[in-house]
Length: 50
Image (cartoon, rainbow, N blue to C red; front, side):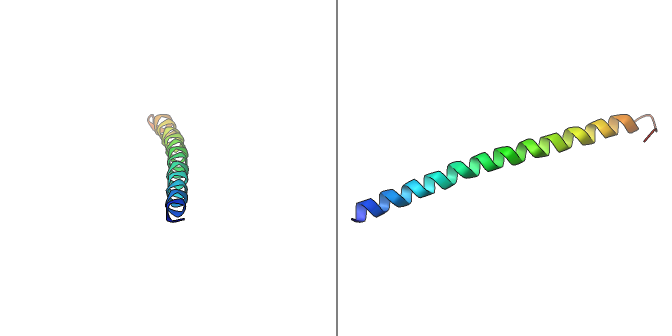
């Protein structure tokens, strides 16, 4: 019984960790897209026409 509880806790921890990785990867992509938009706007404003 003790072994079953330990295995279940390990499985839950593993699933939470993998889910967190996907969440952080998605957040990283969102931040990257926002950075690209800022770069594009800065390039447009480079000549003083904002």
